[in-house]
Structures are given as C-alpha cells and as structure tokens.
Image 1 (cartoon, rainbow, N blue to C red):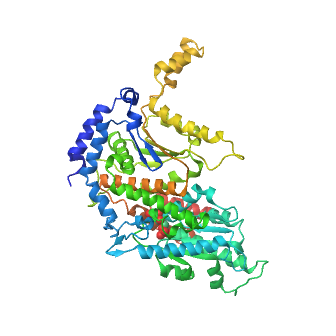
Image 2 (cartoon, rainbow, N blue to C red):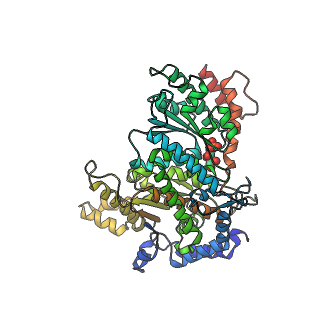
Length: 564
Ligand code: G6Q
C-alpha cells in the first residue's frame, strides 16, 4: 500500500478541499434542490441525513476512492474472517460473533466459536433469569433487589450506557448500580444505601487483574461479610465466607484462575474470550448487568440490532454504508479541514452516557501515533478528540463555541422520533420541543446568520445606527458548520444495538484509513506502571525515589506531609 498522503486519492482530496474551502453550504443547498433527499441513507428505520456537510457528490466519490485505495473491502473481509488484525496482541477482533445468529458459524483460528457463545448466552439467561424471578436468594433467604457491577473502562462504560439508555425497560424493584472509580467515594456512596442481604455484586474484569476493580471488589466483599455477620435477619446458609460470597458475588472474566483466587465460585463465573476487546465487550458476558436490568429477551434484541448493522456493513457499497459514510466524513474534516474534535450530541436524555462511551471507543481505538508497521505518523493526524453531552442541555452550555467559536467542530445529532415518556406524567409537548431544538441547531449551524440578516434584525428592533454597528459583529453567525443527523423511531434495544454497532464500525473504518491498530491500547500502561511505583511512596515512610522529577517528588512529599 502506498503511503497515505502520497496516494493519488489523498492528493485528489487535498486539491478538492481547496476548491470547496470557501463554498458555503447555503450555496450548495440553493443550487441543488434535491440535496436533502439525495444525501441521506436509511438502514431499516435508522435514517442518516448527511446533507448538512461541506461536501458535493464529487467529494463523496473521492472519499470512497480513498477507502478503496486503503483496501477497505479487504480489511472488512479480514475483520469478519477472524484474522489477527489486532497484531500487537496477536488477536482476532470478533465481538461481532457475540451478536451473530447462533445457527450461523463464526470462525476464530479455525474454530467455530458459536457453540461456546451460545453456551455463555444460556448461562447468562439462567443467571439473569434467577435474579429477575427471585429464585436467586441471598444468604438470609431474601431475593436480590440491588445489583452492583464493579468494573472499569470497557467493563463498565458499555453496560452503564446501555442500562441508562434502556431505563424504560427496567423494573423499579430491581436496581442496577455501577462502581468503577477506585475513589472510595464511588463504592462508599453506592453501598451506603444498600442492604448486603439483598445485594448481588458482579465483578466484571476481562483480565481480573485491574487494580481499581479488585480494590473495589475486595472492599465490597468486606462490607458484605461484615454486614451479613451483623444482620438482623438470620442466615439461611452456613456462615462460612465462601458460602456467603457464593450467594452474593458473580464474576465476568476470561481469567478463571484469578476469579477462583478471589474466592468466587466458578459456577458463578461467566466467561468470554480474548478476541473480545474490552471496549467492545458489552455484547459478551460483560453485559450481564444489562440482561439483569432489562431481561434476556431485550438483551437478545440489542444483539439483533448489532447484527443487523454487521450484515449491512459487510455487504453494502460505500454510498449505502452508514458507518463508512460517517467515517469518511470524519476523515474529510479531521485530515483536510484540520478539525481536531468531533461532538456526539444525543437529543435523548437516555443516551446521556453515549458520548462518553464512544469517547473511549474512538479515542482508545484510534488515538495512535504509529502505523501498523510501527512507523511514526508524521504527516497526518489520527483520532479526533470525541466529546459531547445531550441536547438541549448542551445548547445552554457549549453550543456558543460550535456556532461562533474559531474551531470547526463536526457534529452528530442523534434523536428518537418518539419518546418512551409521555402522558399522563410528562406532557406530549416535551418531545416536540426537543426535536424542534435538534433540527433548529443543525439548521443554524449550517445556515448561520449573515451580516445583512443580523443588521436587518437589529434595525427592526429599534436600535440606533451606532448601536447596530457596534453590535453587528457579535450577532453574525458564519454558519457552514457541518452536522450529521441520525433519527430512529424510538430508543428500543434493537435500535440501540444497531446504533452502537454503526459507531463501532465507523471507528474501524477510520482506523483502516489511518493505518493504525484500532484494537490495542498500550497508551494506558505507562500511567499504571508509575502509579504502582508511587503507591508505596504515598502510603509509607520510605524515601521518595530519586527517579522522580522534582515536581512529582514535591507533590508526593506534600501529600505525605498533609496525610500525617
Ligand atoms: C478497553 C480497555 C480497558 C479495559 C479496562 C478494564 O478496551 O482494554 O478500558 O476494559 O482497563 O480491564 P479489565 O476488564 O481487564 O478489568
């Protein structure tokens, strides 16, 4: 493969960007009445309108040519064929198998993994079913009312995001909580209101070595054993620690030995495999908290939605391929307009953790500075900063910068046409107001407000010519700010699953264009190593290592002084 920026496809885009740089989207819309109808694609009930982008048909063609030049089709085939595309960890990337129909094979290293996937799904169904129907009993014979998922990163963000998104499918008598931060405030505040007799802990850790998770899990076990030993209700089982832990702890992991060493009954362990990356693991056993929260049939719907996206992504041509379109538009702005960030803006409060989830998904996947061969990437940038918050809240916070700041921030607006919440408790007007705001923002970002329009408004308000002149520059909106709009009928488990898989594949496509390994995460290691060295220095009285710089050494000394 030729070097990216030397390729004819890349150079054609550089030249094309020069032609389009000063073209306003208002002009593109004015000269092309069909633009809105043409620049859209539908996957089932999921609609992507990408007409409000700084693109023409030629731009899209050139972007697809770049995808071809990077052999995207072969990369997709390799992904689904279970090739070890995560080459720095020598692993396949096959989380798609987790949402594959069980009667269709999926191969990893020559083995059909579907029987094992089905077995874990069955285990998950039994376990979540027992918690939900009350046949899982705690050590005092009571049913479980609260489930606490202890995990971090990929073992937390996905389940949290989905559980928040699917709140309308949850029961009030079975609450799911998430503890991730090693800050004792997180665990402490969560368990403060819980009864150990009716609490089930899920320790979710692929490696079962993550310090934050194990620290929280050990503290949770201590709290549980102390709480049960002093509990007013009598134990219905023997008071041995192992028996009590067996009634109140399950584990989700690839590390059976680590789980056993912690003291969790292997019968209470759900497994998954090293071909499931942490940030792609909500579809696996890591999703147990989701299955408990919404029930296995809904979890299976989530999987079905993900599979629907997989099927379309694998087979459709680029111009109908939603993740490819989103990815290539992202490349267009990031590499050719030098936009450094990308905002995900769900107009749906239930999706309030969706931006955070894909902040990890995207930034941990494509935040890489060397290519597949380990060569430094010096002449193009990879992985934008991904951020976002739900609308309309964002409008009253950071949208000012989107409209009138000096940065170009491409945006995705996501909204369900219908809400789960309505009469009699919530007025029907809420959702119409929300949607009106969503569309108004995309229109405002695209159109802006010209100087002439702003001036006419100011004059009509009765201001003097002098005041108008002084205010005018502040009232102008340049517009020409790109957005994608993704609409779906209602946030069902199926639609959510499809949406998540679309964004996953978008990340894969961008990683393919940039030539990086989207599936490793070595960048999180250094901080962990240094924290291990600093921990005893903060805890103990030993001399602070001379290996530290003077700033870090000074901060350690300060903390030690204050702690005394
Ligand atoms: C995700 C990362 C990372 C990981 C956490 C938790 O892709 O690998 O976020 O999920 O570090 O790891 P464990 O599940 O092994 O505890």
